[in-house]
Image 1: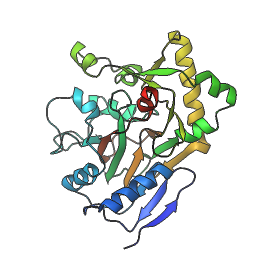
Image 2: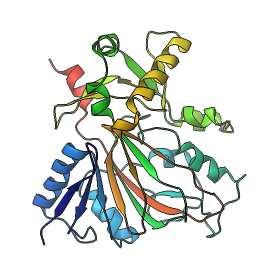
Image 3: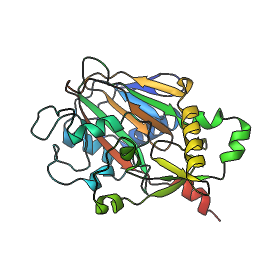
Image 4: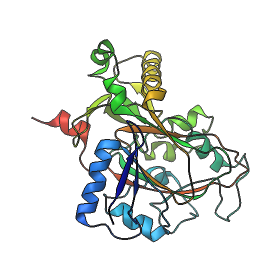
Length: 294
C-alpha cells in the first residue's frame, strides 16, 4: 500500500498507509529517515503495537538508548528496560498520587528539552506510542531548532556560533526541587558539552541546539550563560516554530532529538495517561564529526 504523506506545517508530517507492527524493508527504513530529515516529526496514526513490536520497529532505526533509566533501579512496568514509561501509572497499575516521585517526571516533561542531550552519544529518534490519553490536555509540542537558527538575527548568529553549552541530566529536576539523589546517581551520567550551533549531517541544515538540560555556557559566567540560554530557548520555541500534537489512542509520534525540542502540556494527573517510548542513539554525530574533521 502506498504511504500517504500530509505535511503539518514547516515542522511535522502525518504518515498513513504503513503498519509499524510489521518489519520494514530497507527501502522503507530509508524512506522514514528521509522523511525525518525533511519534517523532523512524523505522526503515524492508528498503530496497534505491543511492546515487542515497538522495540522491533525502533531497532530497525539504530541502537537503543536507556536515558534516565540508567539512574533507576527496581520494578519496571515493561518487559524491556529500553522502553520508557511516560505515564502517571505505578508498577501495580494504579494512578500515582500527586506527591508520588513518579509525578516529578511528568512535570519535568513539561519543560522544553531534547531526550538525552545530557549524554554522549545523544538520543536520535524518539518514538512515543499512545495507549491511554486523558479527556483533556496532555498535548505534546515540538519546536524546530533548524528554523530557530535560520530565523536568528545575524548579530546573534555571530555571537553564539563558536559557543558550547554544558548539558546535565538532573539540572531540570533540580529546578523543580527534586534533589533527593545520591552522590552515585548525581555522577552516573556526567555532564557533556555540545556546540550551540551544529550542522545536521544528513540535511546539511544548521541547528541551534538548546533545551532545558543546558545549564551553563562554557567560558561565560554562570549568570550570563544561563540568561543567554534562556533567551535562545525563548527564541527557538516561538509559536511559528512549533507543531502541537493532540494525542489519540494508537498514535505513534516520532521525532529527531538532534533537530527539535519538545514538551508535554498540562493534564490532570488524577486522570490516567499511558505512553511508551523507545529511543535510538545518535550514530553519526553532527557536532563532533564537524569539530574533529581535519
